[in-house]
Image 1 (cartoon, rainbow, N blue to C red):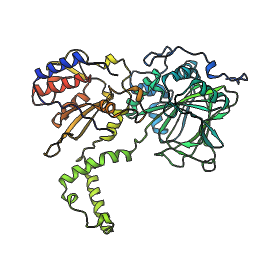
Image 2: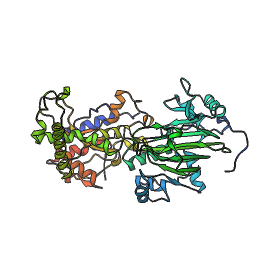
Image 3: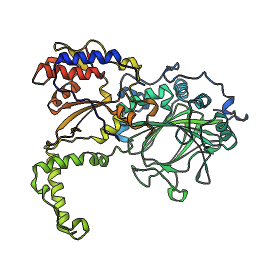
Length: 499
């Protein structure tokens, strides 16, 4: 991940800040059911909708509630309650929610359907990056991908003649309602939420039995699909793996998903899915989250700073290691005991609240790669009047902001200074969401750019985070100039508004 180089806001005069902001905004540019026996329809035989814009709106009424991230998740898993879901199912066991409501089925179908493919093929899709065409043959995955761009006619041939599954990667890049859903879910989980669409012809299976390193929510969009789930060989697995038929045993669940149904299962759950005979085709979307979001991942993130802070006050951690240790000449039980004592002391301080947990890399990775807010671009511009000392203000897009405390990136001969970075995802690019490495270095720096403040601003920033509204004059900073400098910086990034 490329480290950002955010602008440094020193406590200069309010007049200078105001003049600079006015100049910037003058030149600112916008950012970038019954079995069918009829012959199966080909993709090109489907009634094609007009080519869709990436920012148009849905006509189908949604059964989901988008008032808040919590309400969205509640409506997604209804009639199951959120508390029951997390106490009984999350990371524990699969859940199948059957829906008989035709409006829900209709809404699910509108998220993505077979007839979307021809128009989407005009978006310069590439095999492997955007689309995989696969089929499970004798327990192994056979890939039908071709070099170059994806053509509708070629996909159609593989779909009909080879009974191959079409796997469409990250459709939220093109489908507004999936963007809308996943953006809210990212706010709810506080982690990345990706998606894949699978379109499988009848009597066919796309992938062999396998398990994933993600929590999976399957929405059945069209037709029906049979899911066989098996006991994990690696509970809460941290990586993807294919499992052989001999190893997995008998299924614990045999589920037929119908349009409008939802299926959840934890990471590590072995699964395989196929479209039954008599069903023209099946379309489902998987919403995935919690990849590399474990306690182990958090420890890997926070441990360096914890140990660094502890070393500043504990001289035993600054003593030299035994001679020859790195050459393998001094490995013994005493060395292990010394290390254990240092870790035990650090754990005691952490448990007693004497050490602050500061996640840096996980926060940066999340905020850099997540979806931007689901809204029109003009809503992401500085809003309303410029804040003044007597104004009441509040933060905008709190769910799209993170704060980190980390060393300054400025190169000096003095001791390393700790500073605050306020990072946000307002300028992220929807088109590159969850695509990994699709941004060049300049774009990645732009995405992760935020604001930098002195460590003395930490309490004032926390005030703004925790309050629904706050008077600028009440900010816990020593001078009026510092208070105005802080709110003007946040306002310029569209992160603050005057009430």
